[in-house]
Amino acid sequence: MKIIKLKNINPIDYQRIVNRSAGANELIMPKVKKIMKEIKAGGDKKIVDNYMKRYGKDIGIQVTTDEIKEAYKNTDIETIKSLMQMIKNITLVQRAQLPRKKDTIVCSEKGVKVWREWRAIEKVGLYIPGGKAVYPSSVLMSAIPAQIAGCKEIIMCSPAKLDGKIPAATLVAADMVGIKKIFKVGGAEAIAAMMYGTKTITNVYKIFGAGNSYVTAAKMLALEKISIDMPAGPSEVFIIADETANPSYIAADLLADGEHGEDSACVLITTSEQIAKETITAIESQLPKLATQVRARESLNRYGLFAVVDSIDEAVEFANIYAPEHLEIMTRNADSVVSQIANAGSVFVGKWTTKSSGDYATGANHVLPTGGMAKMYPPLGVDAFGKWMQVQKCTKQGLKNLKKTIETIAEVEQLPAHKNSVSMRFKK
Image (cartoon, rainbow, N blue to C red; front, side):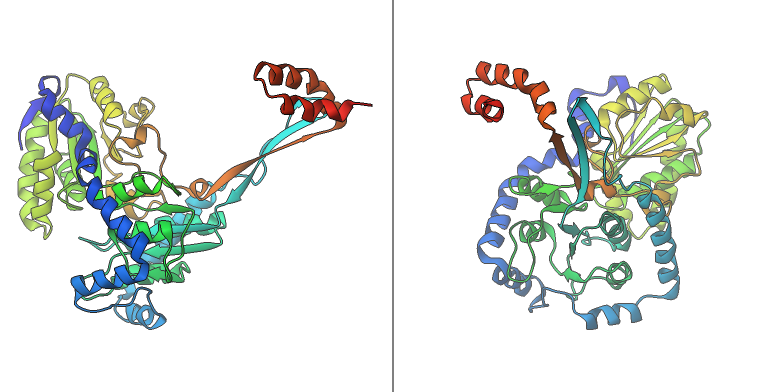
């Protein structure tokens, strides 16, 4: 871990940092395509064949009611209470985001009305990661807005651990919010199964959820046939700090992201070289105490950056180029910095707003765009589980008011049937 001046970073390192794990998608695409093609052709049989190689037995594709009951027995009461508070807060925030069922009606001409009506997507698939950690929080972040939106069919896929079971807390969270169809499939296999459908797993119209590089690549390939929420890949945090920031807090928050996996990205941009030095010291102090220290250190080495800038404006400029998944602002007048941010998935303002507060309990959604996709994708919300349907209605007078324009443009575009569909309605 070394400190550099941001303006002095060499072009190769700059691209590595800005591209982070998204830059690896191209390399793994051929393998991901092969996996998805195999699931499309083999369906349940291929999934079970893979189980035999991975677990040494067929663990069963769909989670049973007995497995759910066992999961409750293996989940302590404090976890249950914590999930209940999360459900309350997420529900409050997500309900506030529910679009009006009918948009404003616009009368573009006398006798012509145009409006939109919102409809929930009928069949959705939730991907819950689980390779290196346990993510009951991701279940709540995806399932609650889907239910509030009114999706008729919600299925969930998540990888089983080495014992052939989805972690107990993940299953309990799913049951607490009413998810009935849960499948023990992970990675690109899960995305392919939800995309194409198998005998056991229903095909869906849109896939939601974060995952590793393989999951992200598979979701991008799935766009050929269905919709996805966003390319939500390996986790990333970007911290803007000045001399008022607490280095121990910065270190803790960088490590909180780095422990997700070796391909996570941890970036500190500060106006104070002293803060950068003290942060690295704090990281070295905190790392040995973490059971996840190996992957946290690797993430810092691979996509980490400790850079000094001349001003907060320079930090903001780079943040908007980087477009981080999580952006923490630890500066004086942090609220005023927020107004300058154009590209970020989720923003955490001030020293008391830790990344983990949004990951778990504030009610904000933690399924966020990564790899620079925050430039064009929003955080996951209720609106992502539906779509607008456009509606228009003309009276006879309304169509007459548009008649000349339609006929003229139809002639310009050499589409006589378009013209006739209007003209014939006014022939005597």
